[in-house]
Length: 100
Image 1 (tube, rainbow, N blue to C red):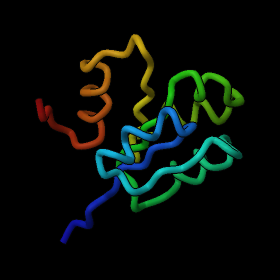
Image 2 (cartoon, rainbow, N blue to C red; image 1 turned 180 degrees about the vertical axis):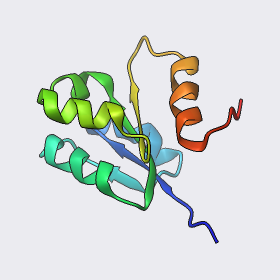
Image 3 (cartoon, rainbow, N blue to C red; image 1 turned 90 degrees about the vertical axis):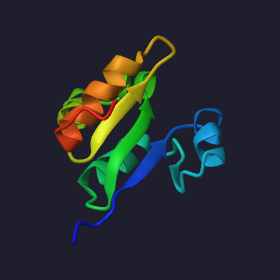
């Protein structure tokens, strides 16, 4: 039986509040951001990590590459100019099918 994977959100309280209200339970603050996101990428119980694109850009290059190339879990970097298509493409990589 396949185990269900969770959605995790990492960022400051302004970014994570909406996700918390939507019922996302795995919320991580932006303290020790680089360490936390590396730990999240290595976890087996998380399928999708949502983060602010600007926070990812501020990571050291080695960690950025690890985050950007992660497929399981997939890291969805949101920005004010992000599009639904970009998010759908990331999710398509994880599950291997178009759900839209």
